[in-house]
Length: 132
Image (tube, rainbow, N blue to C red):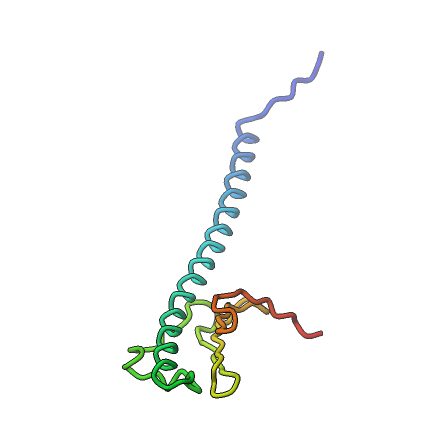
């Protein structure tokens, strides 16, 4: 007589439980990544407010300010913070009479940052190589 192989109710339940847990883990990870992408987008939008203020300052003074603290209420009511990483902007100017600026936000992920530069005139995503 052949031995019959069949799923028991317990075996079927166990298999469905494992599939449900795996699906939940995948969905959770997807939501975390989507949340991170949304935060990057909001950070870029906050940065755009700063960029508009910097361009207004440049239009009035012929150069970009040496620091974001020099942007008064005439240009921006308050500096919106990034919503990723340590929630702090890195800003610096370069060139003769501060004609170039760069605005960065650390994403909180090792070696990654969002960057806007007047050289490229667009947002970029930088991956900074780690030091050996």
